[in-house]
Length: 351
Image (tube, rainbow, N blue to C red; front, side, top):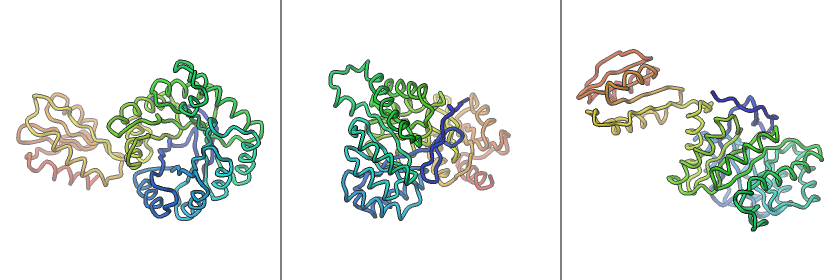
């Protein structure tokens, strides 16, 4: 059973992050910020996929000007990604960003940090302190991998002290690495040292097919330990895919508050007498527009099939040329193979 660690509650516009609130899946837009219409279209796609918070890059003044227009046309909380420039941070806050991300690796001047804090206080804007191993390495080229976790934690502590000294605690923390083990280690260390909500993710995770396993291992391990209040799966590709993978990770741990259907499929072996994979793909297509906490199973023989069916809301346990239809754990019909999909669809509509 997952037990979330107790944290402070952080307000990100209307969203709340921390203990007692759902884990939020987030991502970044991947079009030019100055293309306002493209950003808005992508945000709406992300919202439909289950995104709860979206981050937008604002490297120039033109981007922060566009940010204000984007925020005016969307209801989703927007975080502005800030690097190098305190002016961009202040512009983003004044544009209406619900949260900004600051990188201790490239915004270090104490006067600049205090200006940002004062502006964030005035606008009730949350701030994510986001330490990135790559940024730290750029400053500390001689630091070996074994010591980078300690260095990231030291940078985090130093930065947080500046905010706490100024009386600012509407903070979210994150420390990211492209290395799975170091990502787990640094987030465990941060969770032990602070009570702020934590954003977790594996950075630079790669193409979707290469990113899904290391991201799931890093994020899933931490969530299973109760660490993590918002997550991002970073892939080189469609941000909607990031949201889908993130929600699948939450669902596997019982943390997806949106509760879409869960499909369990027989792995298949020499006992199968029908094409389980083909049938399961059709069932998955049926489920794509269903938004209920249903447990659906498609099984290929009588070894594990009846047991899985007994745990499912709706299930098919297939045999040669036919299948047994289950509902709420009870066998309700024997159906010809050609009619299995229609029979299951009918039960889905009735559920």
